[in-house]
Length: 235
Image 1 (cartoon, rainbow, N blue to C red):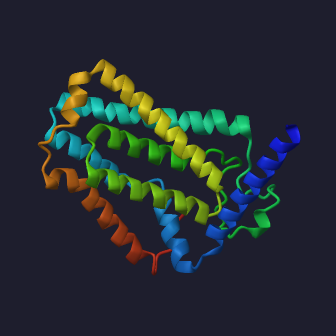
Image 2: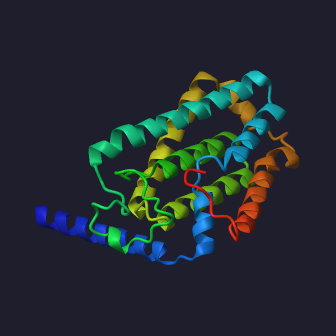
């Protein structure tokens, strides 16, 4: 039984490494610039603002404030559990870490290697946590599709940059979904009337489409800027 478990683990690790090397191996200067932007910490502030405005435009300020606080609590939990607890407990080196045997095979962009450990991905945990919370709360196809596309590209950028395995992404996605589900369940139990208010049918296309318009605008801007802008780390 032990040898079987070891073989399964070795096969999973081999597949995980193969997927990463395949994604990381397709690179060029344009994609390097684009993926650096997409993976940035601050470039998505307009999207976060659009989600906040969506709530305050349509709902009473008390309901919108509760929704905003719910999202902040979720992101805090995601970040702390992922970065401060699980990573140091598991201790899985990032692919780009110089102590990792596969690091010579990794295409590193502008010297960016991330921190020491990468399991699970904090980008995946935070982005998918927020996405699932929006999906659970609003139940709107356009908004849900926007959040899913955003998350998929964020996660892809982390593998492209060589700082996360596919397994790191999967674990972060699962963690974000679980945290979002717990927060939303508590929200519905404590504030059932507010939870129903968020699911109202009265949202018009302009209101519910605001985050999508902002997302598409940022996407087009980054696609253009990537031709001639090499972004700084941590953008």
